[in-house]
Image (cartoon, rainbow over all chains, first blue to last red; front, side):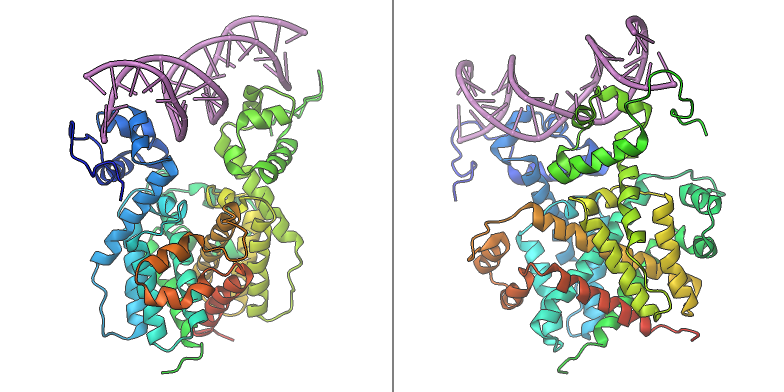
Length: 223
Length: 223
DNA sequence: ACCTGAACACCGTTCAAGT
DNA sequence: ACCTGAACACCGTTCAAGT
């Protein structure tokens, strides 16, 4: 490996990949993704912006490292082994959502990158492993991972977007959706508006996840 | 309404909302979302960047109008009425994916905005209508819409991201995923790598959609 | 009414030069 | 080896002034 901190001659570096990613995640939580700039990050580390490019070739590379770091939390949440496949898959999907929710704009960071780091790959391997051991064939297991991941990321993207625009926190908040719906004639949207504008995102997520799991049960399995 | 083109006195305006959105979509298709700047768009319309702000208060507002325009294609694709609910829902989800795929980075534009335009609302109303008429209760119908939409947008985000980074088009393309997987020890990823790195996104999408529909069938319905 | 010109306060990225 | 300083080529947005 030829990373820059191998030789410890000269002044000890003020920067390194791990510390930079950590500081970037702090900045993300404080200010959000749009305010996470290379200059601000450099400022937070007491360094000039250009210095960051010794450790990350591009901002995109930094974001990928951040996504991988975000996913590392997913391993921490204990995955109940021994359980039934449906329980284990449910736990894994919940852990993914929780990991993304743990950082402001976490889903946006994750969706915008393609991490192939160890934590990300380990998570994917675990999900597919649960399904293969449950008797699903390779194609179904792999595609089930993609479906669950796409749904979870898509859901959390929405959830965190809703958190970004607080609407008015007034108790009788009409909300842009409500205004638009009542303005036009959308009978089904009108009838379901209370559900659609509910902020109980956990309930929405659990519903979708249950749909996916129940759908998987209808597929042929070995055991 | 007090939109700027109500009175037709003076020089005819070179700009208007509809033409601007159309030009922006052309630019999007040619250059992608990252290259869609207010200055480049203004250039394409033979105008200075500042002039755009008479029609859109912010770039975000322009993007929202673009998302609504992208969704208008979804209405065009005929939705088979009379069919069974599962067939209709399948058709609607496919139409959403097709509409997003019709423009470069279409899913990214859509996911980054919250359109409450007529086409977007009409689509949502139609989906919920199909489900309510099939006998699903309001909460299930509304949440099923969210699940299908989140999955579809999440999937198309991935699909268009894969299109952006062409990898190497060589026949024996290892790909970053393959390299990373074979480097570490991920038995289940290794076994399913052919499926995971398949570019048959339609097959992946159809698999997830089938899962959701089959999951919906397990829910209580009236008829 | 509609657009220009010019500015303000930023960006990501590069790279010679210093220590 | 590691970082500074300064530049390059941009951004979104605002707004007085022109026509």
